[in-house]
Length: 249
Image (cartoon, rainbow, N blue to C red; front, side, top):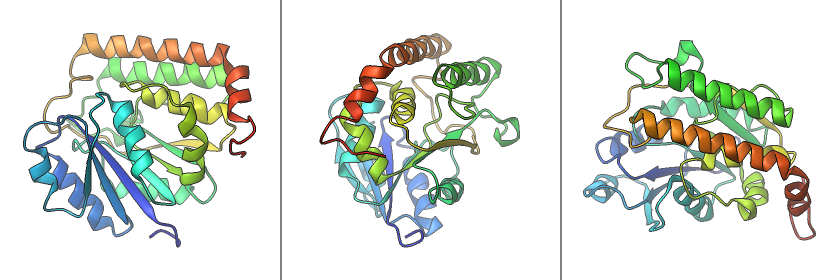
């Protein structure tokens, strides 16, 4: 519990067999997480065996993609506050306290991995990845007139349940650029958002996305396309979010 609110952690997994148990234990040790949901997204053989000894609840999402896994996790979560993190060893469980500290005043708290003081030695955040994430975040900031954004690809974030209920009917992305869609929609829904620096460490194992520069560049271009698409359709998206029967902020 955090200030009388139940906290759910959603951990999507595909290629994190060697790090997922340690990630779960680290979050258990924080003492504030009430529910941990592992979304097995066609994960590596042996992943379920790593999850089984922990307190986490494992669910299987057959539709491949980071976005599909997160959307399934949101549907399964029962907490008042819902945190999302990747269990690949790159994030610190203790940083959940940073995100929670803003949850009293903010609807969605986004993490940022591009602040130099928080990038650990060995982390896969070289100049191109760091600049690319920062630049695309600044594009979003300018196009949507938001407060300061510095990372478009960070997967460590926390939202109030009410915010997820507003956004969930409008998610369309099942792939790896789900994160920017959530950011765009949260702005168009007039939710209160903020982005704060989180620690970023060396990954356990190999990433199928940021581990390949060509794939990472392609993902960045798709993110840019999504941002332009949502900006051009901003009026219709806002109208859909505010339609009768939808939640209001």
